[in-house]
Each structure stands twice: as C-alpha cells, then as structure tokens.
Amino acid sequence: MIRFTLLAASLLATAAAAQPIPKDADSGPVQAASTAGAGPFKAVVSAANPMASEAGLSILKQGGSAADAAIATMLALTVVEPQSSGIGGGGFIVYQPAKGALGTIDGRETAPGVASPKQFLDEAGKPMPFMKAATGGRSVGVPGNVALAAEAHKRWGKLPWAKLFEPAIRLAEGFAISPTMARFIAFGQDSLKVAGPEGRALYYDKDGAPLPAGTIFRNDKLAATLRTIAAQGPDAFYKGPIAQGIVQTVSSAEANPTAMTLADVAAYQAKVREPVCGTYRQYKVCGMGPPSSGGTGVLAMLKQLERFDIAGLGKDNPVSWHLFAESQRLAYADREKWIGDPGFVAVPTKGLADPAYLTARSGLINAGTRMAKAAAGMPAGAPMARVTAADNEVAGTTNFAVADTAGNITTWTSTVEKSFGSGLVSNGFVLNNELTDFNFAPEDQGVLTANHVQPGKRPRSAMSPTIVYDAKGQPILAIGAAGGVTIIAQVTKAIIGVLDWGLPVEQAIALPQLIAIGDRLSVEKGTFLETMIPALTAMGHQPVATALPLKLNGVQRVAGGWRGGADARGEGRPAGY
Image (cartoon, rainbow, N blue to C red; front, side):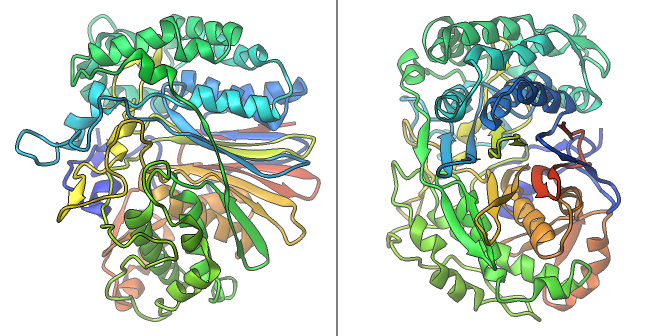
C-alpha cells in the first residue's frame, strides 16, 4: 500500500510520530473538471458517503428539518464511514434556522477524570510516539455526538427522535463495503487489531484478513445500540449498558487500558456556544468558537486577504496563492498559541476576530515576498503568560451539510480523529482517539500551553463548519471539511472559490489545495499548483508537492433552490429533490 507522511506532522514538526494514511483513500490529485455536484434542488444533503446523503434525504422527504436530516446523516455515517466519525466521537454543528438566530453546539469529547497534563509523556518525560499514544484506551475521550444530536433535535428538530435512526438501522442490517472503507480497514490493522477484540472480529475475517470491498457487512451490535438509543433517548447512551460497555472497553483495552468511569460518561454535556462571526467584503461569515479554532481561523484567513484584489488576480495567478499562504501562516500561528477550551483557559476570541486586529495582521503580508517569520500576534484580551504549541491533530473526520425546503441550513463536522480512532470498538461503534489532539508536551519553559490535558477538558480542534451570508443577510453557503489541521485552509479556499472566483460549490471544493504552517508550504501534487512552484519559490517560499488529506462537503443557494457539492477526491455525493 502506498503511504505518505501525514501532513499534520510534516507541517507542524511535532515530536510525535505521525500516522500515515492511504494515499488513495480520502485524498489524492484532482483535476479541475473532476467535481461532484448536483442541483438545483428544493432540499439537499451533501455527505462524504452517498448512502449517508440518501439517509438524510429520506428524512427530508418525510418532512424533517435540516437538523433532523443532519442527525440521520451522522447516524448513517457511523455505519458506513466508521473510519472517520460516528456516535463514538464528537463534533460541532452550525445551524441557521429559517427564522431565528444562528446557533452553534459543541459536541467535542471530554477527558476523563483520570486524565493529567502528563497523559502522553513516557517514563523519561518525553512525548510518546503518536501511534503508541493514540491506540487503545489512553486516547479515548467521552463521546459527544449523541448529546449534540439531542440538543440539536430539541432546538430545531421536527420529526420524532426515533424516526431519525431508521435509515442507519437499516444500513447496519447490511450494506456493501465501499472501496474507500475497504482500504481503511486494510490500513487500520495497526490499531484495530492491537486495541481490542471487538474491532478484530468486526472488520476482519476468521483468518484475520481485512474484509474486501463489496462484502455485505452486517453490524448487529450497532443496530441494537441504535435501536436502544432511538427508543430510550440520549440518556441510554450516557447511562446504563451502553455506557458500561464504553467504560469496560476503555478500561480493559489490550493497549493503554485507562480507568474511564461511568461518572465520566454520565457527566457529559453538549455546550451551546456563541458563534464567531465577521465580515469578508460584503459577506458575513460565521463559524464555531473555541475549543474549535475553525471560526477564528477561517475569519482570520479571509479578513487578512480582504485588502487584496483576489477576484482580479484570479485562481490561475501565483500571487493569489502566495497571499493565501501568508494569511494561513499568520492564522495558524495565532491558533497554536491562543486557542483552547474556554472552560479551562482564557481564550481571546473577540480579540482574534476583531477587524482592527486582523487588519493590522494583514499589514504584515507583502504581495511580492514571503515574510521571514509568521509569529502569533497579541489580540485584545490575550493572557500574557502563554506559549505557542502545535498539537497532533491528524487527517480524519467528516463533514455534512443540509438545506431543507423551509430555508433551514446547517453544516456539521464530526470525527473519531484518526482512521478508526483509538482502534477500540464498543457495542458496534468505533471509539475516538480525540485526546491526542491535546498537546503531548504540556508546557514550555515552565509555562503551560492552552491545550494541555486536564480532566473534563475538551481538546482544541481545527474543525470548521461555516455558514456564509450575502449582503442582505441571507445564508448562501454552508460548508465544512475533513483532514486534520488542513481543515481551516480547505474551508477558506472553498469560500474564496465561491465568493471571489464565482465558482459553483463543487468546483470551489475541487480547487487544488495549498497549506502553509510555520515555515513549511505544501501544494497538492498533480494539480496546477505544482506548476506554480517556481513562481512561489521566487517569492521566498520553499514549496513541496505532496498528496494531501482533503475532503469537503457543502451546499450553496443558487437560482431555483440549492446546489450540493462533494469532494471528488473521495466517494461523497450530494442527494436532493
């Protein structure tokens, strides 16, 4: 199998050893003509697996809201895309009802009570190798997606709770394994076969061989779990036999068993957060606040580019991509220093989103040459004692977006972190390795990082579900991405593609990707960006062409209704009516 070093490590240069991922799984070269879009529709769902898009669409056809369809999509992805997300993980949702205020809900996982700042240090006090830390019980956070779904349903749902589980239950009773899922099963042996017995039994045959594409896959335990939660409500996940199963699986893991408790699981709560909003040209852009770094990160990248004529330069001009790279470097520097769980550390969210601050940061960007060093700034409200620390967020995750006939629109990014998360499976669903999104080294020169491990704390995330509004305040785009730390730049690129370059959502998604963090710059191999390497080099960059972990999904308002866009680098397709 062809593998490449995961971008999160190569760009961030963390001490942790990175997890490789299959080059041909959820990423790879894409040509401009390679798109996955459809519409216009009265209502549409775009997910990273066509069966999940159809699951959400079936709920819309029954009169469900965008929230109902999004919940059904999340549940379906638990079944058909278990390597990326599910009820054993967490996520963030951004929801604009047709009438009423924008809402955002934080379903990020929490560290159990036994967690400590030294969680991922070895006996010598050095950061553990990534895969050693991520596999098994040590990396598992209390899952948040079920609580997130329940809060979203309470606020914006229309159909009965149990109805939303029906498509996923049918899928769990049998579906054909896709080529993408099969590649990840084969790739996931390093964690699935090491962490615990349920994953081995579920995804490998009696001889230990990975199940191939086309296999009719039944997940009877997951079907039973879904039926229980459907009938008894979200408390059935956080209390009782399902919670006991999570605790038992984490505590008895064959790798890194950890004493998560029933109290840890029962205490979980989804958090309603204030959205992070700002303007870009005549548009309004809103996203998720901390512990996500997506809302501030996307807004920073855009606002720092606002004074440049990105539309006039165009997508085929190396200067456009140089400017984008420089804006990324500044935004990622702020992310690494300032963002953490606001329940535990002071986060200068308002300062990071302040137009005056971002205008000043933009002044550091030169249209012709690369800045020598892109350092974190000092936004208003920032604590003085804070050090910069990159995390180990790896390529994984999924995003789905929905628009319904009533005008409700949403985007939800969901994850179990790396491929098949911790490698642990409980009651048929994969358990996350989200705690490895904390900083492995908790301090630098005696100063604690914003993102060090603490009991009950939520790790920093790059997930960036984002909604864009036109000058009249009408939502025109809901988008999000997968791919670890690259997510923020992926979402920003797609927004630029739609707003500045006038592309339909699927073509904006299909644009090649450039990632710039610190002193490193990567361009997507096999795309027109590779031909710009000499021009970018002349401006002072040292670009490297590489395969990148990319996967976006979005919906766009167009004449006649909604258009869905999915990333043709993967297997996602929109579905609408």
